[in-house]
Image (cartoon, rainbow, N blue to C red):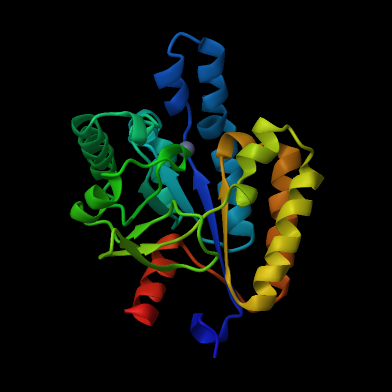
Length: 260
Ligand SMILES: [Zn+2]
């Protein structure tokens, strides 16, 4: 008997970190062109991505800074209306390990307040840059989140123990190799190169019945040639017939039932 529900062989979480221009607003508020690059997400990428997800009947998880919710509210509402999950991702894409305790708490409160405006209480948290402070997990737990998605020590979800204490949080682990940003933005690789990294990893994970969590950034993956890689991957994964496509919240709740 495998780990996954209904005889599924492996699980796939498709996630998008919907940063828009949040990080750029914080780092370079006067750089008008940089801001415009962030707006490629709400203007062009998100509609395209939502259509692609519909085409393959996949529900995804969008880790979204509060800033994106406040600035591009209609776009975020569209994501929710079309059945996808919204999860927390800071307010202005802060580097949590480098700010004070008070500032970190305020980041979470502002993020949650923005989510409230679109009627969502997020179950999951992913830190901007996957960078957390030694206070973050305690805060995430205290604020009632159900899962975290930052650690890189497994390719299976697990119950997160922190400093010898059970946090009650499910961890949905990540890895830079399954992230579009280094492929397309840091290294400017061609779409086929990203496919060549992701496809064999998926095949291995399928074989062993494990967990494939792919992180994308709408402003990066949303360019046409890159989105074709996702289109092809989704088709090939679906063709297996026994891959569980779930949102992060669904995967986390299944993991909790199995392991606790
Ligand atoms: Zn981000």
